Length: 116
Image (cartoon, rainbow, N blue to C red; front, side, top):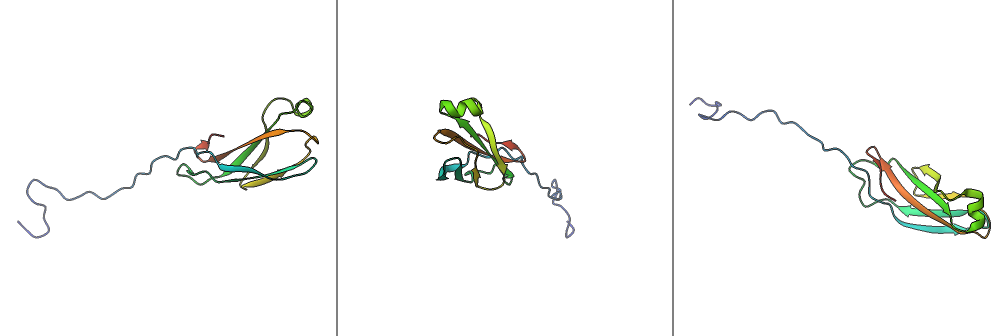
């Protein structure tokens, strides 16, 4: 057998290629907490999700829902998007004094929006 030739019944290896699996939506952000409260505003902060789904986090979406009757009369019963951006903290105002609200956050990447 000549030097550099394949052994009998075997060929040379093909040129390697790379395959990249598709990203998935990120997991839920963690440690959502209230950092500050005033008469008509609240500041929230959170930590990035444990899994980005294999793609960079593009943005976070924060939703707010009124709990008390007076706040529901102004905002309604639906979850409202109050922030959509790259930061892991936000302050929103124009809230009704003396009312309670629920907040939730999700992360979004190129594959889509993750859970709240």
